[in-house]
Image (cartoon, rainbow, N blue to C red; front, side, top):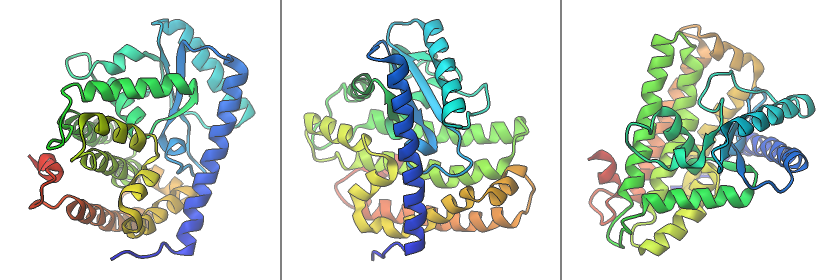
Length: 318
């Protein structure tokens, strides 16, 4: 049974979306001003801005991808662009040393599997597909996304199949970030609470939106699968899920708005980032995260029943 999203939750969701859209447009204008019509590289954004979920404390997860293998030139452009975002838009940059700290070539993220496909490349590729948004060189960005999907669909799966190659990589990415959380918090000494809450909400919704995207292409020809995946991945996760399940998403969004509201409150965010065990905010959001997970699981089972023809849910489990 569907429900209506409360007015309060709608306000929260729209506020985050409006903030995100405004900054995306501002970034695009600066990029166009600085780089003109140069088509040798792509600038994109991931994270909360790309998902239209930016809150007060959000940083901007930019990525630069070069098509001419000139990493040094791309690095200079990246540093220049980041400095402009700080000075002109007062945007917060992520801590140096992360997976988006340096540019990659487009070829690197198209190399799927094998020893060279490490945490950095799978993260870049999956986030480009699942939540990426263009900032500069829209044509190059969309061409790259299509090329990646063509690799995943190289066997041209027919109407009676799903794209297992893509589904397996989405699952691999989800498990990678789950393992990385333990590495960063247990081995790296970083605050666990804020990372765990983000994993249980935004990362989980991203993951599930990927499963749904693969699943709804069942019953389509290989060409139709390609078109469906292109159009589906062109949407940010909430819009993607709403387009697939409609008002069934309302109960999930009601909980998700609580998560965004918590991150948008500086005091709550600071308490979560402090890493204090047993904090009331963390316990409350953990409880809501369990309901959030169960609601997503229920939607998956309704959309892809285990006794039905669509093999998506069975493929996730086995």
